[in-house]
Image (tube, rainbow, N blue to C red):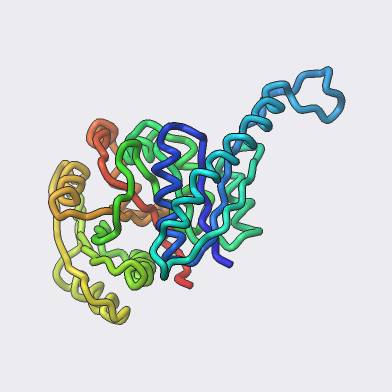
Amino acid sequence: MKKILVLTDFTDQSGQITEAAVKLSGKLHANLILLNAFVSQPALSEYGTNPWSAEELLWADESKRKLALLKEDMEPLIAALPTADYRASIDCRQGMGSLGSQVKDMLKNDTIELVVMGARTGSAWDHLLMGSDTVSVINHTDRPVMIIPAGHPLKSLKKVTIATDFDEADLNAVHYLTRLGRLFNFTIEITHVKLWGEEGGGEAQQAAFAKHVAKFNYDGIAYQNISGKDLVNRLNKLVEENGSDLLVLVHDKHSLLDRLINGSNAKSLLEKQEFPVMIIPAGIVVK
């Protein structure tokens, strides 16, 4: 059975994260795993040879209590889903160690379809740049990661924008989006982003990319182009103006995402993110 992994640290935005996960679970026919992770500290000696520190013991009890409350809040949301949607079960789990390593271990044992998490600073882009938890999760998973900025919930999924440089690896991400689109009935805008000073991305490359995309037999795909300087700012503005509910980026060490956020001014440009972001691994296998 497919599962959606929901990462929570019990901040005020937890409700937005779990609400998004419930909506997604209904269409994806996926159960939900709530995970709260704790990075252990040096243990107190009086607890013996294999001790838990006082802080860990307190965390374990408090985490269990808060996970139960969060699950209780999610159950009415599941019950209120449209009749045709799947009613997910909720599995509460606790993990000791870094968030990235916890996610990596869970991917080995569970059929994870998607990871949903929040951006602690309130800026999904800023968290991508500076948030070690998010970077660690993205680097340890071969499944998509959806990041929900504080104060900007996933209200609906009617239009999705994916940024691409027409790299062949991005075709896997587009294919994955067409699969989701058949469930959610959203349109896809493929936006070619050409960074200042970079070559390529001409009409021939776009035509070859579009030819491959056409094989996915998905109606409702449009193309857009942006280029020049300040591309992050322009991409954000484009997504806002075209009414997209979600911005999608493809991730690997040579990806457009890596090049977009590689610069000293990137943090200041990305601080005002006001919509959810999905990061799709370049090598994603569409199931």
